[in-house]
Structure formats: structure tokens, C-alpha cells
Amino acid sequence: MTAASILAIAVTFLAGAITDRIGRRPIYIVACTAAILFAFPMYLLTNSAQPALVVTVFIIGIGLIHASLTGTQGSLLTEQFRTATRTSGASLGYQVAAAIGGFAPLLAAALVGSFGWPGAALLYLGAAVIGLVGILATKETWGRDERERVRGLVAEESRARTVSGTPASAVLTRSSESR
Image (tube, rainbow, N blue to C red; front, side, top):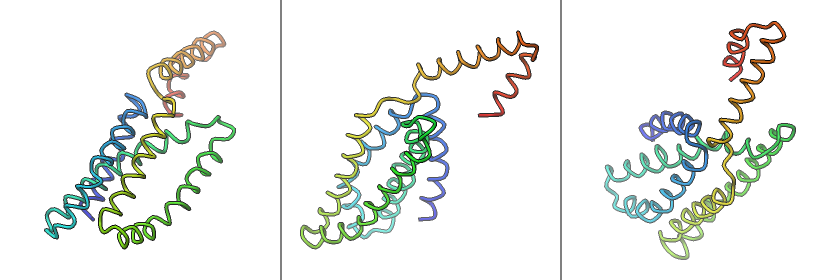
């Protein structure tokens, strides 16, 4: 758990930085696809009862897949809402997900009781499929077009401030500080 968590810290920041360059959707799509592909191998490796394989499951599941999702979600979810409703909208989404997700261990145990370990793998698979369908239905919030639009707005503001007497260097300094 410790190794997976330390890796997750780095991967969370890395995923967030990559989303700023290539967009939110590609990282989220890759992570959801990885979760789908990992659903059954994860439980097979865990059921092997070999410590190295169990550690590998944590490294892949938490350190790579989950961290890639969480590194993307902060910006992806907030950007789905207009500025005036951004905090409430993102918070509502997190809270509903937490309320529903809180039943996952109980549901997994019930599925394992009914179907054996494949029941828990199916629950994990189902959650990953829901995430993939959701991101495929969501528009990109920070792709090339959006970055260019923001650059244009910053340049326009810079020109306007230069005309009004504020030096362009002061505008650029304030602009970079506010990010």
C-alpha cells in the first residue's frame, strides 16, 4: 500500500500535467480502458496469494490506474460547469458518487457471496464501463481549441492594458501569477 500510494502521488501530478497539454478526455479514456482490461486479471493475481503479485495489483490498480483518474478529475469535473455554478456542480457530483460508491464494499461482498470472486471483478468492470461511457459522452474541456482561445484572450487583455498605460510585462507577470 505504501509503495502504491507513493507512486500514486507522482502519477496524480503527472496525469494532471499531461491533461493540461493534451486534454482531459484522452487520459481519462486510457485510464478507464485500463481499468476495464485489469478487472479480471486484478482478481486472478490477488487470488494467487503470492505477495509479489498482490503488491503488483496495488501498484497497477492504485498507483497507476486510480491515480490517473484522480489526476484528471479535478479539472475535468469542474470544467463541466459555468463559473457561477462550478463549485456547487462539481461538489454535488463528488458527493453523489461518494454516497453511491460507499455501498461498493457491501455490494462486492454480496456479489462474491453469490458468484465467487468474479462477482467483485464484475462490479469493478461495471464501474469502469460507466466511467468510459460517461467520458465518451462528455466534450473535451481543455483541448487545443480551448488553449488557443485562452491565449487569444490573454493577448487581447495584454494589448488593451498596454494601450491604457499598463506595461505589457506587468500584465504577463500578473497573468502567469494567477494560474
